[in-house]
Length: 224
Image 1 (cartoon, one colour):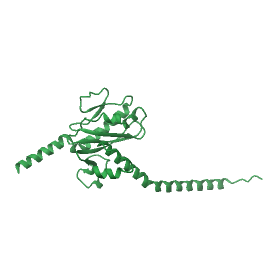
Image 2 (cartoon, helix red, strand yellow):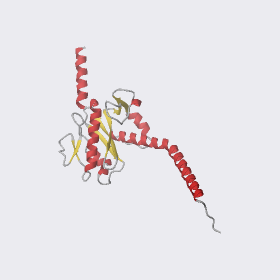
Image 3 (spheres, one colour):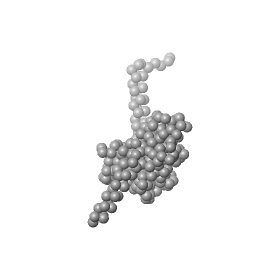
Image 4 (cartoon, one colour):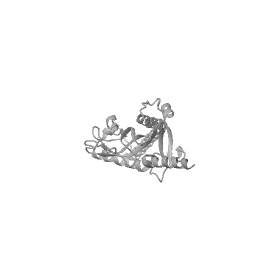
């Protein structure tokens, strides 16, 4: 005789399975969180190091980062009180120092999700290195921002009196224009907005503001 189960039994049995599965997934997620965080930090350090010409692996990223990079905060606070997120004036922002200049973080939104990157600037706020990445931009189109070929377009451009922007058929002699991505208009617009936001956030550390501070210091020293 075929065994049958009541609706109540089936409901309870299904509910128990759902609860057990949820508990297992939670335990796995919590246990993997430290490893995920470590991998994200290693990837971030690799990207920052790449902007200054230092290639790193996940295994040696920590060591090389400590060797070449120091963390700063703007406005001046303890680095652990700052974050890469937010807008200057409301949240202290992190940046990164290297021997020769600073590295500023970039955060934005592309066509399909988050985009991000880092720009290395020398003392004159000229770009000496760049790296970008994305979560879900279209391969061959917006996804091109993650290539070295795209990043190379920024070398020699400037982030002093204004932000760099992407433009179709950019004027290569213009220190603030970079060729937009062919077929990736929305991603290009997202990169431009991301660069503008970074400029607004960090302009007190770059370009004319830096020159003004240096000039003021020179005058004060002369007066003394």
